[in-house]
Length: 59
Image 1 (cartoon, rainbow, N blue to C red):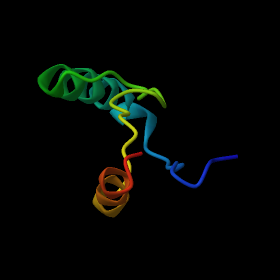
Image 2: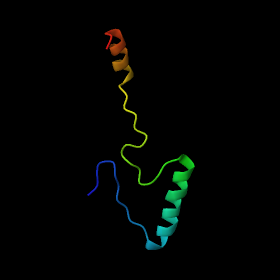
Image 3: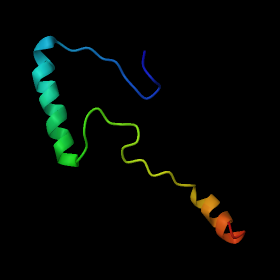
């Protein structure tokens, strides 16, 4: 089963080595790893409107 943000696909077995190499190389170029962890690059933030209300009411 997959989550809402996941995808299943198929490819010929002969593509597998190039596919894995591509994942490794593309990750190195952007400083990420595969599989991407759920917490990677996660910085929770309120919408700007909430920030403005917080400042207005001293929260």
